[in-house]
Image (cartoon, one colour):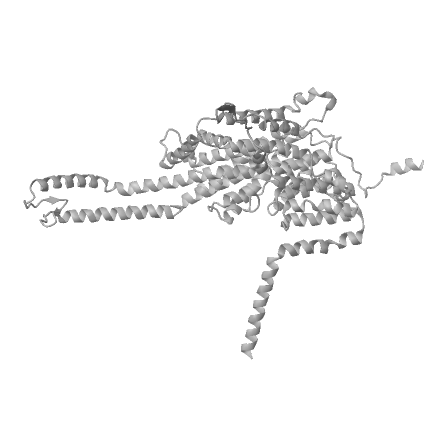
Amino acid sequence: MCLMASGERNLLSVRMRVFLSYIWMYRRLLLIVLTPLLLLPVPLIIKTKEAECAYVLFVVAIFWLSEALPLSVTAFIPALMFPLFGILPSKSIASTYFKDFHLLLTGVICLATSIEKWNLHKRIALRMVMLVGVNPGWLMLGFMFSTGFLSMWLSNTSTAAMVMPIVEAVAQQIINAEAEVDAMQINSSDGIYNEVFELEENTDEITTKSDPEKHENWYTNGTVTTWNDEKGRTDEDHKKEADDQHKKQEKSKATQSVSEDRYRNKKNHMMCKAMCLCIAYSSTVGGLTTITGTSTNLIFAEQFQTRYPMSREINFGTWFVLCLPISIILLLLSWLWLQWLFLGFNFKELFRCGKEKSQREKASAKVILDEYKKLGPISYQEIMTFILFLLMALLWFTRDPGFFPGWSTLFPNYRGYATDSTSALLLGLLFFIVPAYPWKRKNAGNNNSFDYAPLITWKEFQACMPWDIGILVGGGFALAEGCEVSGLSQWIGNKMTPLGSLPIWSVVLIACVIVTSVTEVASNPATITIFLPILAPLAEAINVNPLYILIPTTLCTSFAFLLPVANPPNAIVFSYGHLQVIDMVKAGLGINILGVLVVMLCISTWAIPMFNLNTYPSWAPTIIPTNSTIPITSLLTTAV
């Protein structure tokens, strides 16, 4: 009986494990099916437009957070459900999926395609690293600022993917150089002996060859040498040959151990960890600086202009002036944090002057110099790409800078018509027009003709264009439009009115902490798309300038530093195998805290006079809470 009972228990446990394995295998399918069904009572019982829109919002939010469906596929759900619930007609909802944002993104990707095609990004990165020196601490700082600069204009993912192979080559060359130095130090103890030994051996050969029948006894380093008539070699020669063979074997073993062991010591491992993390963090922090630097900034700018069309505060120039100090401060603090956490902050070592470079510094400098020499002299294509890049940035800065009249004032009758996307499209089209090889000829038989090819082709542009991000952003616009039309945004704002009793800095801090926590487990675009329609009505309800809350939360949405899956740059550096999850959590937690503190510093100091944050703007709607109390004077006036 006991055997039968134990057998039944084992069978039951096996069946349970199989059942759970099937549940885990089909967990995404179950989530896709059960989420709409379990939330269905919300619109069926309440039967209001707000409840129906909230149902769609919950379904989309859960799918985005869990990634049960691809993010861009989930973005089409509002286009499906809003017409069925009668919130928005299909034609209206379709127009929200292509906005001014997509035109701006198109121009930026044209620039990024040309930069990556002609290796201008690699030249910029290597040149900036060469300027700061090759000390591991300064080298890390050089990589951080060069990566941050590139990330202002390229996507964070492509920047990290481009710089990491260079960092990996430098790190491995430093380790190999240390191995060679150690091997030289090991052999240096008997190096003099070997030279003398070889000299004496040559002398012996000459002597014995001159008189082969002569038997002599002499002492060399305390050993007796005798001649072997049969083989023509001394016993000492055999011993020397054995010693040489033994040394060769030891050297080959040492070389093999160096190639097999990835790190010679803990210090090398810590250096690799610090360099990997500095690339991940700087590619994210650098993207904060410009509107086009990261998708979250673009989503905020487009949704803000859609909700507040009369506002002129947010443009490329004002955002750059606002966020450049944030990026510089955060890059420096991140460098200090990683330096202290992994390398140890040694002021004497870091700020030494006039001393000879160490072997590892010479090795890393050689790698960077060799990589730079491989690029050759700067090409015509790189020059043209850089010129177009400068023109695009110049047009962005001077369109409507605020502190002097921009070029948009040349069209006074069409104020607000031209945006940053206009400049991006103008320069983006030039990449398809400017010839890549203006002096190149091709021979077709006896005829010579010019081979015209632009800087980039449409296929190259398509390969770089993030269509999924465009669809995802369009889904966010559709969701925001539905929340506005159905009245859900105003309902949420009214319910959050009690938060107006708290100090504004505490409301901003709470919003930043919540967004920073959510973005660790959800994608950055999905997080900002979910929270913007909620936080904007909150600011209106508590009678606070919406920028006071929206700017810091937008910036904090990019602070996904804790996990490898939090954002693509983290995953890229993690794939090189130097890091463990606990390393990223330990370092990322400090960067998250520093990031929130720097953003709070910004929004409490230089951001206030820039955007007049202490005043509720005229371009924002005035919302009267539905549960507010009517003053007694108004009642008496009405009665009279």
